[in-house]
Amino acid sequence: MSRWEPNARGRLVEAALTLYSERGFEQTTAADIARQAGLTERTYFRHFKDKREVLFWGAAQLEELFVTAVTGAPDSATPIEAIAVGLDAAAHLFEDRREASRQRQAVIVANAELRERELIKLANLAAAVAGALRDRGVPDTAASLAAEIAIAVFKIGFERWLDDHRQREFRFFTRESLAQLKTVTAGK
Amino acid sequence: MSRWEPNARGRLVEAALTLYSERGFEQTTAADIARQAGLTERTYFRHFKDKREVLFWGAAQLEELFVTAVTGAPDSATPIEAIAVGLDAAAHLFEDRREASRQRQAVIVANAELRERELIKLANLAAAVAGALRDRGVPDTAASLAAEIAIAVFKIGFERWLDDHRQREFRFFTRESLAQLKTVTAGK
Image (tube, rainbow over all chains, first blue to last red; front, side, top):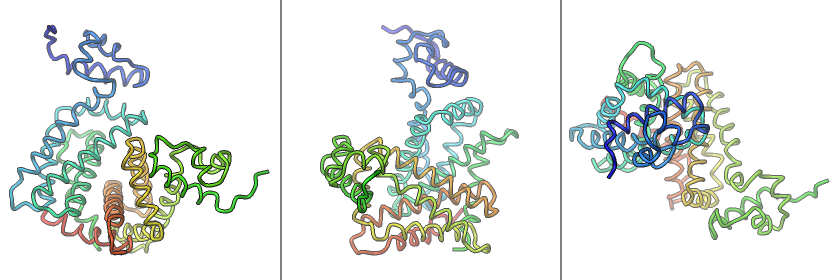
């Protein structure tokens, strides 16, 4: 029987971000994280399979939210309108996590292995969004293209949101980037 | 003094693609590749620093061509028009390499480590193209967005070109995807 640890997951994530920021990802062990959180190493491994997963456990939730929103967009929505619904849902997930997201981003950027993992996460997200668009009847190439654009808007919006010091919402930036698409794609 | 080996690089690339396709990437050594090419292992390492580089040595050339073309686009070109010039230049690089590109793609897709390396290559290409657009005076976010779109069009066009059995040129597909952008981004 495992002892009930109130909010163990959240405490482990917070402890990991603190230690990864202070000492670096390489120099931190799962045992260090557990100790920092006042929990055992065993509890750590009940929640996360390795040192990386504490940084990437949210990927599945992000993907599910995004895909569900795209799937649930009105039948009349164009690909980019369905994407906009997905982006709003994804942005909502992060709204109260800016400081933790900033810490996480700094850890990722500082480590080549984590940067690769982040690229894979986004490539998987693009594939899932493309699948959701195809299920809406969007032709194959258009679905892939729209999904890649969705991820680009998400990524660029995310970085701008983290850099922002005026407390604007994440979705302000994804919406602004989406609006910019028109300008960017003009002329051809 | 090193002995002159006619077209050693090309022979090594061809031998690597043959062995990686037949036996798999993991099961092939640099010595195997050199033997298959009728060259020494020492010659292999004069050309490529490891087993992966024989698959990725073209990345620098691709990036240089793409960036040079974007930089050299007419001053009046919009971001997407400059991207179109870059895509044509990149496509030209591949026109006579479809069979080798197909072999290479199958090797990459079959190996997680190589898929990661390919994602990093494309992320670096996106960053370089964004830099070239900023140098043209395109604002930061628009430059990043246009560059991500460029890479998406390149990637999707590349896959469609490899799948095509009607001998259409690579640039047919990048141009078609670029044209589709208008449809895909409609409505918002």
